[in-house]
Image (tube, one colour):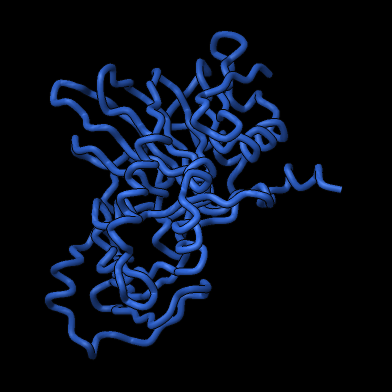
Length: 311
C-alpha cells in the first residue's frame, strides 16, 4: 500500500492512499492497515477508487460501531439516514471539530466529494496536535486548567426553530431529565415541544489516540456559526475567554490551516477528536457537492493500534 504525505503542516503528514488500478473497490483494502494509518496520521484521503455514493456506508460500516445523529438541518441523501449533505450557503466556515460542543462528539468524520470545486469552497483542516504545540505556555496552562461551558437547546423531533421555542416555551412543560454523559447537568426535557435543554462542560483540549499527545480540538472559533442549539458559551465560572488568547488562536489557525484541493470521488477520513475542519468561501459561480457521514463510535479501540506497540 503506497502512502503519500498530505502536508507538512500535519504531525506525521497525514496520508493519501491512491487506488492501484482502475475501479478498485475501497472494501478491497486491508482494514487493519487502514486503522493503523488512521490512528497514526489522523487523516486519510482515499483517491482514485471506485465510489458509489449511495453505497458508501458499505465501507464506513467496516469502521463504525454506531453512527451519530447528525444535525437535522442537513439533508438526508440517497434515502440513507447516515449520509447527509454538508451545510448550505457560500460563506467561509471557521475551523471546528464537529459537535465537540455536545455530549455526542463523533470519533470519525467522513467527507466524500461528488462534484469537485476548482477555485473555491475547499475544505480546510488543522491538526490539533500541531495547534497545541504552537500555543504559548500561558495559553496551554489556561486551557489545561479551565473548562468550557455550553448552554444547549437540542431538538429531537426534527429541524425545529430553537429561537421560537425559547420565546414560547413554558416552564411547566419542562421535566427533569438525565443524559448519562459526564459533564452534563441541569438537564430538562420538553416532550410537548420536542427539545432537550442541558448544560455541558468540557475542555478545549482532547486526549488523542497517541497517549503522549494532546490536541487543541474544539468549537471555539465557530461557536455561534451554523449551530443554533448553542445558546451560550463561556468558561465554567461564567467569564469569557480573553481576547488576547482568541487572537493567538486565530493566528495559529492561519499558520496550521491546510486546504484540500478536492478531486471527484475523493473520500476523506478524519479523526474528529484530533483534527478541526472548516471551509473557504465558495465563489458564486462555483459548484460543488460533498456528502458527509459521522461515526459516533468506532468499532476499534481508541488508540489500539498505537498502544499495541508499547511494551
